[in-house]
Length: 312
Image (tube, rainbow, N blue to C red; front, top):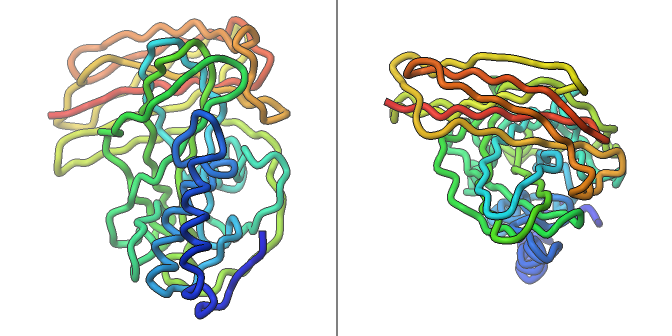
């Protein structure tokens, strides 16, 4: 993809921007705002910045970088939520900077702390309300037929100035058979917040790295929270944990979880080869829950995301 730095040239390219935005939803037969390896989540925001005459680059990683999940298994008729953190793109993060790229080149101008807000002139999320610019696609390893649902849970904007990671998420319902899907969310660097020049360091996608991670979104003013924690699971090893709602909140709705896989070839695993995890979730009083996880079968590195919803 050609790098474009001249602001006047960008202002004169409304048709190119429109074509980029349209292409963001056409990469997969069953996708939403996906584009190329999840970059559709950034394309929509960049189109808004360009139409305002701001200098942006369409080259991936110049200002905005998608944070990508692993492949998530979903059964027919199921509805799932998946929390996604910009910390996926942190040094040593899990699954690593734009894991879905599978070795394609990008501009590594992180760190990518904040959610994009998509509105000029404040391009980044510092001191603004971040947008949940999220996309997803299904894989070839099954027959999932997804439709997007509204993500009702609170998001965390994140901030490049305070070096805190933003997070949002995706909700989907599967009206097809068993299969896999993955999601991405748009994250912004400090240069994007100020519309300044990025340093442009060429790089390639990192190898798969997985680690435990907490992705908690708390809105104290509205009195609600979506607590998600990811656990790396290993075969025949049982892991346990307990989560507590923030002070003043109680548990709401059902406990839930997702299972992610990170194949070395970055392709969706076949359903018959999916990781099988024995997960037992137990409510504890009115404001807590515990989880017990044992990986029974796996061909790929596997992560369980345990989810707890809280409110007043």
